[in-house]
Every structure is written in structure tokens, then in C-alpha cells.
Image (cartoon, rainbow, N blue to C red; front, side, top):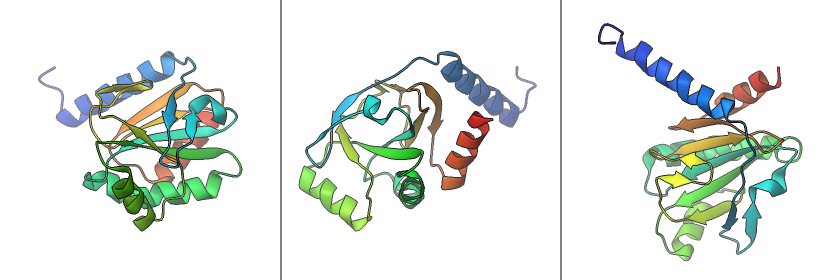
Length: 160
């Protein structure tokens, strides 16, 4: 494969990763404590698309995508989709709450210990987002920042 361009190789790897996630379409779930003290289960959101975004306050690309995720969440939360942010770092809750308030985030922020693997799959870097369809099946994973248009475009394509 040494004669294949790096870009083509990267695209093939991404397509394979997406295909393997889609081919394994089985329901997924987790139960995590939220910053607000409530328990959150992924299965509580059946009937909606759920973007689960693993992030950290110290991560520049994570911070860059937060406004996009907030707008997506606010545009869809009452109809067809929600965002669940999972803070994947060791941070005191008051510091995390202050950061969330400063960023004007209204979607649920859940707390998890840093780990390379979660209930949804591998998290090779931050941010990593997983998209779960209304049936509770994991349909995609994105390593790196997302825009609102990225999320809406993928959901629209999956509906066709």
C-alpha cells in the first residue's frame, strides 16, 4: 500500500471504521452521573438521535466545538435529537460547573474518568463523538471536532 496516497489511505481507514460501527448496529447504553447530580442513561433517550461527546476543559478542539454542539442541541432537543457531553477528565465539580456556566452550555454534562475505552467504544483522543440512532444503535464515531452542519448532514443521510 506504499503507492497509495496518504489522503486516500486515511479515507479508506475512516470508511472502514464507519462501516465497522454501522455493521455492528447493536443497542448501546450507559449510566453516568451528571454534573447536576442526576443519573443519565442513554436508553432514556430512545426515540431521539443522541450525540455523545467525550471532551475535556483543557482540550482546545473540544472548546472550539462546544458552541456548535450547544446550537445543535437547542435546535433539536424538543424534537428529534440531543447532545450529552461527557467530561472525561479529573476535575473538581465546582471548577467544571464554572467552566460549563462560562460556556453557556445547557445540554447535560456527565462525568467519567479518563479512559481509552467507554461503553460506546474506543476514545483514541478528544474530542470523540458517538452518534446513536433513535433505536439506541451506535451508528457513527468521529474523532476530532464537529460542526452543527456535520451532525445534521449525517443524520439526514442516515434517514434516507
